[in-house]
Length: 135
Image 1 (spheres, helix red, strand yellow):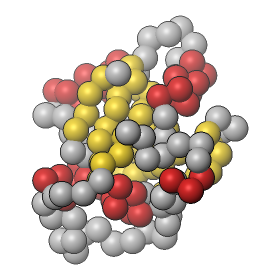
Image 2 (cartoon, rainbow, N blue to C red; image 1 turned 120 degrees about the horizontal axis):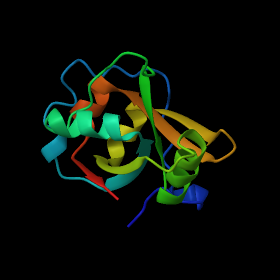
Image 3 (cartoon, one colour; image 1 turned 90 degrees about the vertical axis):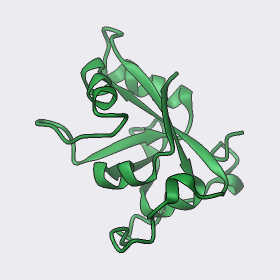
């Protein structure tokens, strides 16, 4: 079930206010009970390989943006992938997070005229991602 959809009543907006997450409030969030939601990221093969080779964790690397952006649906991730990787060599990753953790992420209603998107730095992502897989 996708909680983030074109139905605006089901979208939980991130605050983008830099809510502190380094004070322990997210400890154990990957195993807490709660409503889960899916986000999707288009990435090059090297980024995906880096995540897998680092035990499914995001790592900073040279020339990367400080924050990682995620689409709220697979179709939008594909649109970004087609734009950034016109040769077709990309991967789409699906992450699972608790819906309550979206408030720690930055939200844009219409990123690049494609659709809504959330972003987070790698420290936050590694605290909240409950699952990651290729789709």
